[in-house]
Image 1 (spheres, rainbow, N blue to C red):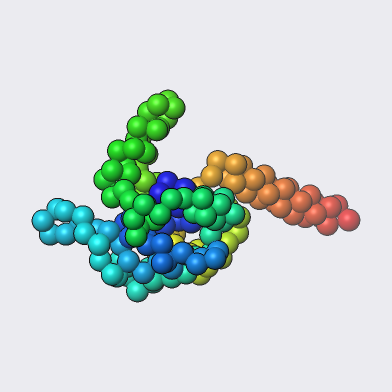
Image 2 (image 1 turned 30 degrees about the vertical axis):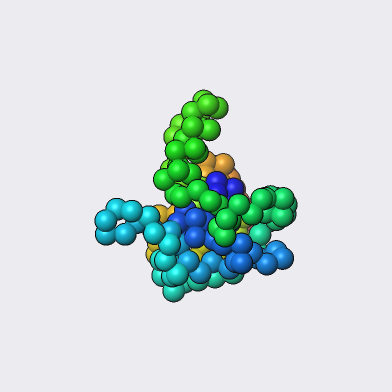
Length: 172
């Protein structure tokens, strides 16, 4: 579940709702989720958070290898419910001296990585199952320190060159 949220940008409930029948060759068909009901219990629902959530995602090589080797213990790819996954994830993080991130933070990381690699918003939205880019830009895409430095250097170079050209033009 952690790998799917990070490498494919899936929601935790979408991962929990994946059935083996949703995995074909190199693709996952996202069409259901496990979500909390009004009584505060997780339940399987044959729907996604929004219509944009229904999508087909091509899996990465490492995800394909992981899925192809996995035991089919139930009809679900991950037999663990979201709350159990989160507890296990936090234990792994603690045991490795890392802060307790939310599973959803992996989705943010995926969006930030797509942004850093220049994936156009429309394609990032499709992969993440979002219907508008406002959420993508406002919530999911985070700034990277290295990109901030690169942008700063680029703009300094641009204006230094413009300034140099202007001074040369005046002197001529």
